[in-house]
View 1: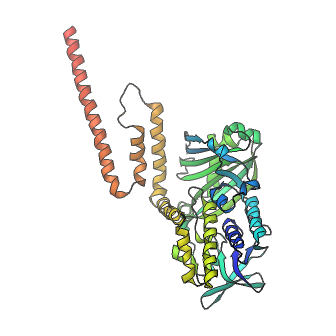
View 2 (view 1 turned 90 degrees about the vertical axis):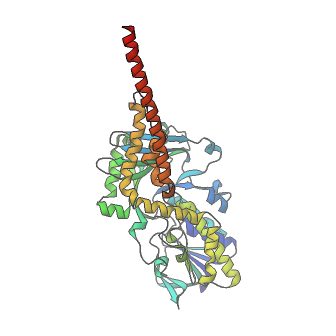
View 3 (view 1 turned 45 degrees about the vertical axis):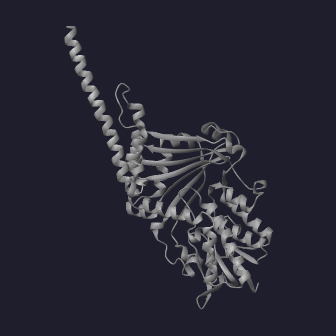
Length: 457
């Protein structure tokens, strides 16, 4: 191969989406993957939102390798001695599914094959070690002992992107903008999973786990979801936070497994797989650092992901598709300079992707700032508020309804500052009025009974 129009580095979801889109447009594309088989280095199961994938491959459901259709979602708040759970069953998703569990090693191989079948050249077992740069312009890649040339190189090579680093678009990896995840896949018979999670064959559950004090761990979050014959249990935290607090995340995962509620769900399971992985918060790379002369970044390489809601795969797919649209425009204009490739931002802005990343930036700022210290108190406030439903004396008055309590203790953190003070003041004044009103009624009532007692005597 003397020279290709485009070299895509990485055969993950972003790279395959880009290569597939380019191949359909008749643009010569080579996709390089360091694994012998795309996905072989991804042992993890994951949750797949399929709407974006169906836009790219409308008939994907015909052969897409899936595990279970998620119809049950839970949000769980855990402490040593209590559990609060909000459970939602969405039976409409049986006929119109939107979310599945799947395995990356199967999914990535399937996706890369779709790109190859469309005409992209897939080369596996080849590791990109550097870029070929001429007068500040990327003109190719160095892979093992070979040099491969192209008009444009797309970096879709994950968090530790060689393309992003070598091009200077993302030279440093800031721990403030990344999180560590550890996950175990625990084998269980399908019939046991169905019974414990109140499911039937082919249907699945996903649970978000939040704790405020388990075995002296003051902070933590995790996820638990069902595959066909296994359960995936993971824990996540900011790398900077783990370093600051000297917390070992795998120990927190063991703590989760020993919690009475979680322990009952995974009882008698056996460890099948274990994985640790670095993920980025949105915003690790600024928009003007997503392109350069002869180079584009998409997916995790450009931090075009949203990890908080599990939207990593759809955002990667979308960014790969938009990178392909940008390259098609560049091919038509025979111009691969940064001024032309800047149109990537316009294509991204035609979707909600940049908005999603911006929201992820704000979430990252919260969880690495006030959130990391306020989280335990917030979760405890939620649990304590719900506990009132059990502890309340029904013969007395409760002046603070449940939702007001939740707002005053938790929701105010997510309210813009300009609205927070007047809303807080209004709520407290309204509650004060109720208290004063009930106090006056109580005084009048007591005096009436005292008068009646004297009168009857």
